[in-house]
Image (cartoon, rainbow, N blue to C red; front, side):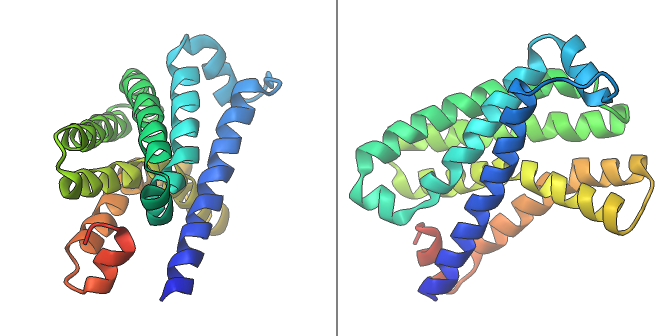
Length: 208
């Protein structure tokens, strides 16, 4: 069981790091004139770079915040990283709300990304509020939901990769499914894990 948890944490960390590396390389890399995303980035103002920077930082910190060992052995590091994580989510979430207003695919995808941004800000805010109030059990549960939403950046790209690269489906259909599925799927899995009656699952999450 320990090896399985460690392997799952490592796989999650590598996926988060890969997407974060993409976000930072997009921010600081050389823009390509024929890339529509790069063109949109150049014309968008501050919301796209703020979203990519905050989201990338949150992705890098999420695996660290999940670690029960770090939380127990280095509580000050956990609190410091948690504060930076919350700030990164605030930045990326507010930028995400702005980006949702002109999302590719129109209102159906814009609503999905807007609700994701609201849920991301809300779960993180509730998690931090419970921590400040000393309610660590509720804090951990809400932060797990926040991390599930942070990981929607990973799930989004997995859905796009499977839908476009493997199944060869039309982009508008895949993008719409990805916009809704990336965060609803993650939240559903998170809720199942949080509510699962087996003590071993609660222990694995660090919320038991």
